[in-house]
Image (cartoon, rainbow, N blue to C red; front, side, top):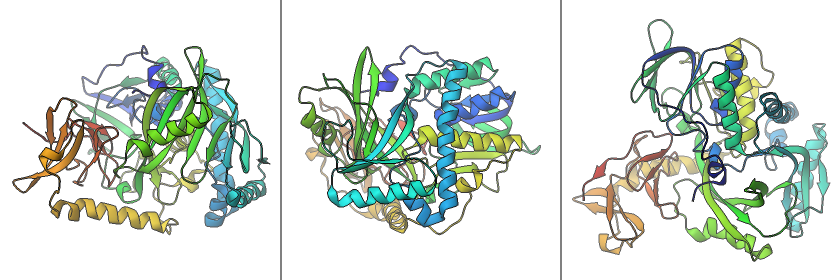
Length: 500
């Protein structure tokens, strides 16, 4: 099934692919919310801007999000205060609150119809043992001078033990918003090219950068890498300080009047709630089922757990849409925003937005626009992409290193223990043929698709995702369909395929 957001904008503006070499002021790689927000601000300032997108507008992360616009990023501010101090926590909160204002200002100025509406946002618990953590977060936020609220009643169809409420947060339809940005970018003189795969960025002899695509080149003074997960490995080394997390969403017609507000609990199993408009109805969007991308998963633990939870409270409900999303998770829980690398001046990046890219993308865009314009941004130092600090999340760092090492080396040395005949229809696995690993998928009629199950990013052994029928990379989160076509970065090349 497609995402609800992509389904609502099927007849949007078409864009052509890049078919000639071009020179511009700024080349932006990626037409998700971060890339298009940068393009909007910069084109409005009079810069010549070119946006390159390997797929369609917002078809990956932005088109598969919950689309909550909020500075409430879980129970986060007590962590920030403990790890970095009150000043950093205060700036982080202020930057994200400012982002909510910025998004509303863009919508109003450009008259974008995207179902924007203010909502209160809640992090809640149904467990008495977790109330202390909620109250601790309330105290932390209040110490920063922000007017949050502790509540024990919400609009949810079940009782809670406690929740922290941020007022005047918001939600929207992200794809409608993106196409509104596209219209404005074009009106301000920018250019957008879809289905144009950027493959490399190199500096030439006159201090300009050349961005290579699968067909042509873009020459520019500045480059912004807005590809969700950076696809240039060296320098930068972002693959050593991030991993990807997959979560699942369903949009449900509950057949009942729904509540106001946006909600998420903070311990597993995670359930996120918001409402959305669709063809005259108000649907309930429920998210959760999180796991590290590339780890084995099953329907019961992903979409199944969401559907089971909804049926408890809305037994006559109907699931209309199912989709999943990827989030880049930095090891210290703060996004990387700024110069891509000290070895690549005038190349910028925004990534590691965790699960809060709607808001963080605007923070990132403003920081990078200020850098290009030579202005000082008061929040820049918090998110500095080249920061080298003690890793606060050592357990996740250790797990990431172990998983990458296993997939790069040890798993490749193991013999595949699956026999070809044991692979069921509509499923896949890795088998061994002449001492070589082969990824096999059998469709519902038994037709065989065979690929080389080695990620085209850095060579990790892929794993089969039986929920979405894809080959996923457990190291850095790349994804390929069962025919070998690349779906998600950081890889951009397809898998080698075997004729069967």
